[in-house]
Amino acid sequence: MTKNPFEQAEEIAVKLAAELPTNADQLEQFRITYLGSKNIIKALFGEIKNVENERKKEFGQVLNDLKLKAETLYEGFKEQLDANKDDQQALNFDVTAPSKPTNVGSRHPISILLNRIINIFERIGFVVAEEREIETDWYNFTAMNTPDDHPARDMQDTFYLKDSTEYLLRTHTSSV
Image (cartoon, rainbow, N blue to C red; front, side, top):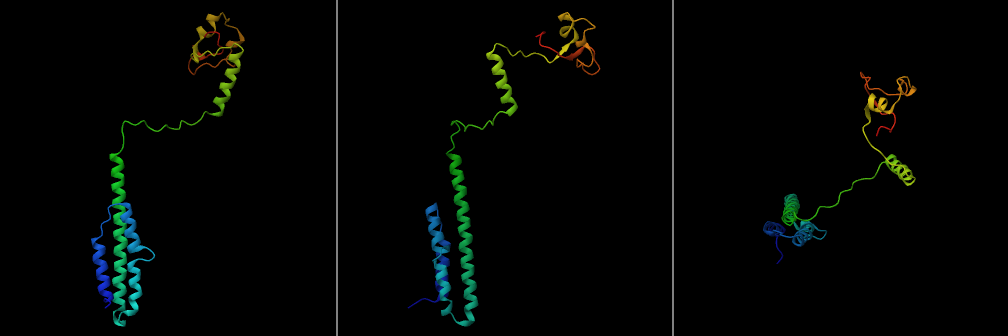
């Protein structure tokens, strides 16, 4: 003898409440059984025709509640398994392992060109000399025996610092 559709729905609800997937395979089996294209809840929707007309609405509501409960449980189990997976990955993390190499980017085109020019001049014997950019008048001109009336000391040829006639931007590399 076949069971009453309400009893079948009640049995599925009891089975659903007892389900507790603990790994991804069991979760997938849960999804196929209760939410897949040929799931047991969907099969019960075909039983609506066997229910008395005055109880069809009630049976439809029971089935919809059952389906909603299955979806809610599935999402909850899935979140729980994902959280457990993250926890397990955190436990398996090796703090002594070397880190991944970082991208350091690339050189600016002007820096590339400047390095090429420097390489060319170094091959023909020049040397790159780096020193202070700001110099005193003494080291830039007087110590180099540049007379006071020399055109290089004119305001339009030399960049003196604001509010100072003693400090200026170096005009040549001879003092280096």
